[in-house]
Image (cartoon, rainbow, N blue to C red; front, top):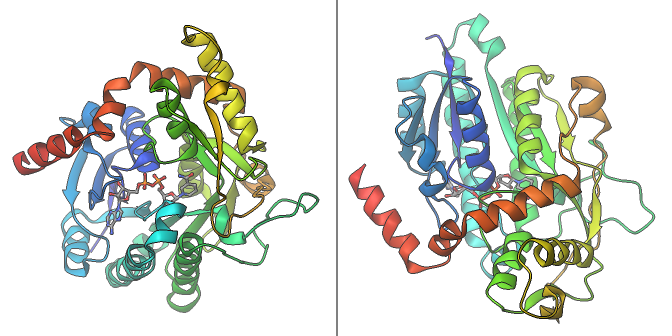
Length: 358
Ligand code: NAD
């Protein structure tokens, strides 16, 4: 069989990063996307409302661990590439209930790889050489840095500390092994913390924005000194496109924006922008900051050395933290309806209604 050069299969395209990737892909006219998503609590078709009627987007509700479904989709659509975003992605949830993380991130990725390998094995030699399996992963697999350590490079040893990062590390290893053992043309990206439109309000930035506007406490773990390296989601998506198009098969690319910030800095920045764009009757949003008991096993610092993707693929982020965070706050202020849907039972109902109508 031959691949359809106009078609890619994306998993997890109804989540935060996957939805941004899909919207950008379709807006740029890059071809047809088959979007397989299980629609967990984090998957939201409302993110894709603007391309709902677009024939270039085909949504399929389903699980990456469902081998029969994957085999059917691959045979039916014959994609030239698979981009795997689907995952359980929230560290706190992985601490309270790791099971789903093992099931989706490890078993799911394994089943997906198995079916992609079978499909790839049936392609012509020419199509085998151009096919790509791109696995989207995280910098958290590298563990935690001390204040004076140099940022993570692609050769930093894996040292995951949470059930989330351990499950992502396991999936990265499987992806690597499928290249070395079976020759599957894989690519892996390990990216720093993303922020931007459509992020579920359990993650730091949308959570703080949501609580700030609702007059609720802004919870900060420990003393707020944990450092994360932030990248605007649109820049992560452009990096994935670049790696997909030009990455060297079997290679890993670290993706980051050289934007290390303490959690407290991030929250202060958000409060300052809100104070300017949506001032309170009196006082500052900062007054709502509350320090809470630290997360178990909380990694102190992540930082990405992105020189490889910059040097070898010529990728650079377009947004600085200052420009990206302003865009993000503005998006949340303009999309309060989206926020209220995802934080209320209405969202569930919307989902059930739209889902059954499909
Ligand atoms: P998200 O939680 O917002 O979205 C995950 C999506 O995957 C949801 O739409 C969900 O319904 C879907 N999904 C979950 N289990 C599935 C399954 N078994 N089968 C099919 N679909 C399933 O996550 P996100 O923040 O968009 O992250 C996407 C990917 O990027 C993940 O692999 C994550 O590890 C990685 N990543 C995220 C960040 C970040 O800062 N958010 C940074 C680096 C890497």
